[in-house]
Image (tube, rainbow, N blue to C red; front, side, top):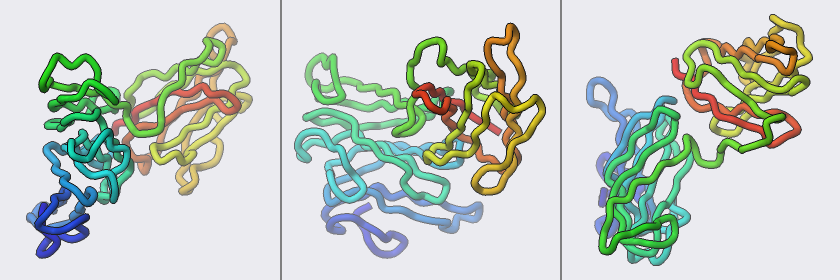
Length: 260
């Protein structure tokens, strides 16, 4: 949008001279629930949006900006980057990422993948920065992103391994960990939602999350006595989404996807 009047507010830069992404959420009757102008002082244009499994939205297009909502632009702002923005269900930015190199890079489509990550496709004239293998002039450029910016799995020695099954899950998930391990579960904002040590007896429910919602996370011995299987059963108030399971006192972690 070039506007900053009528239905549009919050424009970055100079209205009529530069565009923002303009995201509009409508209710079932076509009335505006909320609207967001996203971008910086230069030209920012969205080409693809999809609702995500957690009820939020993922948006992709291109950006010439490196201010306002936009950071991490590659090279000169004479050339655009892919600009990917993750919004929550209320339209607020959870994270944003510029992808590209020193030449022209523009995203045309984005989709959420079965592992909770994202696949982005468009065109690129770059052969530096995030881009490699350019064949000359402009190529298709396809990028696979992890489920959320800043949370990633860590590869660790087998003695610290965490396994989850099934993943994704929609009711309960078994989390196996070494004997004596303590488990913590974090949501995509980095807030701890649960913690439990494997010394707890089978069938015991331990406390609630920070919002007061109870969780069931029951440790049971694994076959052979080499570890514990924690059965996590989120309650009805737990939102779908990606959660990070980690062992306290180590860097061991893995992602689990809850889909109601």
